[in-house]
Amino acid sequence: MAKATPRLFVPGKSPEAWDGYSFLDHTSDDEKGKMIQHIKDCYTQSRDWRVPYRDKWLRMYQLYRGFSPFYEEKPDWQANYFVQKAFEFIETVLPRIMSSLYDVPPLFTAIPASQSMVKPARLAELLLQKRTEQTEQYQIDYDAFKEMLIYGTAFEKAG
Image (cartoon, rainbow, N blue to C red; front, side):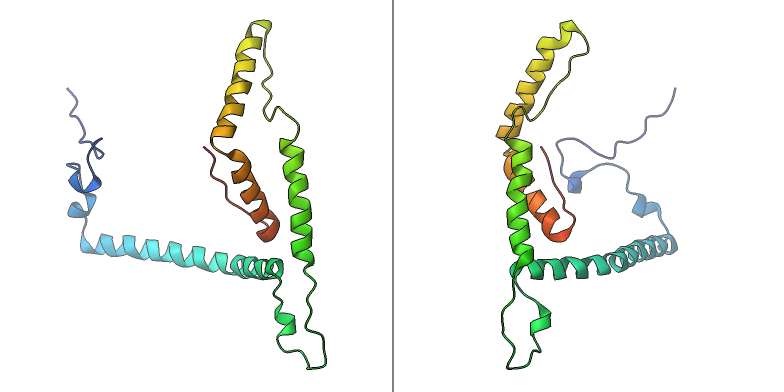
């Protein structure tokens, strides 16, 4: 008869109270050092990859908020006026995007595969519409699209 493997996760118990197998107890210091170095290398690589994007995101956010480093070292005779075209563009386009998605119901359309699936398809549409209202998906999408317009990228958590 096969031997049962120990469970690493015990439902209902906190991670501190796990009775499972701890691989660190059976790992040499050299192997632990290699693991730590691998994690540090991954962190450094991801940080270095992200730096140019972070600079771009910061520059875009500053333009949206009406700050331009171009005017920091201007001569005294030059006007201290910055036209916020980025803000104007984003605040004009965002309502149009949201309107194109949410102004024409239904937001979701279920296409039945056969005649017997018409009623379940309609119920699926109604369920998705109700879930969209309950989770305030409009506001989540609004925030995500605004971030996309400002930074060029965004994260959205649905559900």
